Image (cartoon, rainbow over all chains, first blue to last red; front, side, top):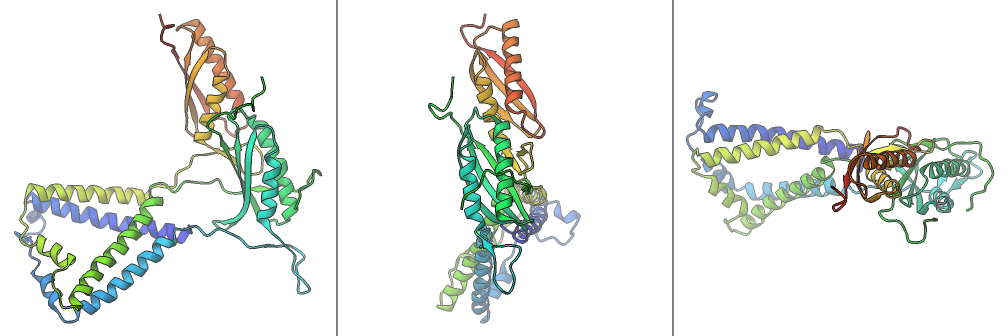
Length: 193
Length: 192
């Protein structure tokens, strides 16, 4: 999800919230007969005659159809904009020029790094990929550790493997994010007494 | 592609810690769906009227409101609408949730608070005298509830100390290890 979409979400939620607060407060005051204190000519009852007149105009169905298409398309675009698109293609390496481009498949490298990490004692499994996240090129590795794993040992393995990955990919702008998940239950036979 | 075991000279710089979207993470898509819903409502009105009809959802809703007079029910609905609006404003302004704790090191490794609680429980489970464990964790502190075989008093305090040491040891690799609180309960039958 991009920052633009998140910003739009917040802006619309804020504006809608403010409108609802104002409308709700006005309705509550009107319901209790207090609205005339601030609005002397507040109506005694709701009249929707104006809306009925609009529905009867010859231009209304066409305008409503156009508005419906625009609203539905906007809504669908907004909805699908929430689907994350974070994949990256092959990563271009330093040394690329007109005579040829050097590229590396970042996700394959991150996958290989995850496989190395999965060999660490106390680590049950690991998977890796390279993604584009909030403007950063990020090697994301998910590690699932046993509940009794030695965290210091896992941290040391993550550092060593991360450094190797940085060397393999060879891009200064690569960042690392290793999510260490802890399994809910100990795998049978993995504990040494 | 394979990774060698040579000592590397470069280091992988850590990315920003992940954050959760909070309420706005699901409120945004719901608002988008609502916008599609409004489009459908207006579209149904246009569709029916273009075909010569006059009974539409929008028209029926408008007619239902006609002649509405002030009442306690209207006031109650107004209060509910205002509260929903207030909640929406708070959701829009609330910062993203943070529940990741960085591991010491340079590669951007982190655990979420739920995983820290599982590690704490596993560490407490290994202590002699502990029957059952339940832990909850925030970014600053971990609370470990243990049911012990020991009755209350000196023996239970000893178990609590050993649990604290074990959990501290298990979480020592975190960049800022959280404060550890241990609460002991004597197992029924041993509690005299």
